[in-house]
Image (cartoon, rainbow, N blue to C red):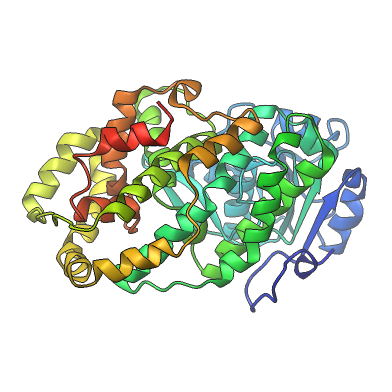
Length: 423
């Protein structure tokens, strides 16, 4: 069906996915759908697990097999892009890593692709960006959404539970990250629109309400999650950025990933980390709402900032510094806005529908998803450190920045972690 048929509001003109197919058994329609979009007899981008999950193990002659341990990094994008030279299009079979690599490589070759999703594990299917690791930093880079998205609920229900749990974790951050976007506009006039929320909020609520059906492999529950994840990606395209679905909680997750890569340690599923990190940022918002007499921070000098970034981020410092420096140069202006308008800004936050951390954890638990640091395999001490440093890694204003500038952080980090319930 056409995208607008699953969207509750009229969509503006934008480079959006044309058609979305969500239902049981629709994997059998893959070739017919591919023909509609001119991507028959084109490379299939996959890994061994995703091809098998889709039931296509013996049906694809022209594969770009990423191998079982592929990462969405700039080097792999380059290899895939080279293999697509001269192709008229591509079919991606997979979820997060496969879709990001296909999306970026197809964009570089200026060719269309469609995706057969094998797990409801993230909200990037329909987005216009790809999350790529480049020089140690997780960055979002421009790309074109797939022309069609195919989500077979039977495939989604049969996916490893940890992937489905990650999808719920990624999705559940939406109300909190959208408030980060609103807050950034309040202090820097970056632009905010309610339209992305109107696109996705009803679907998010339906997926949250169906969370307990996910472990039971209920097809309707998996369809609800898949629909909400697709619409979350659409909301990002309409917004022109990932801001409606990616706030401070995503920065915490990204820094965990970046440091694990540097240390040569395995990375965890992004959505699983985001779910837990959202409990933390939701607890931080409670402190913002209680803050009636801010003790505004002193802005560090350029030299002091550069020294801190080098000392605290080590091998990642060179990549992080431009982001941190840019935000620091605007900090005095932000604090002036906060000083003059904090009461009104706080009232505006109070009017928003911010979930409580215990409600977020309850939803995660209903799906047997990680809801504590221990379940992630993370420590309190390291999380406190990452929580303190995550604001540095992107030139984007989130609740993490505002909490520092109001004087709430770093002094109350332990209180936030206690309130979050994740320790």
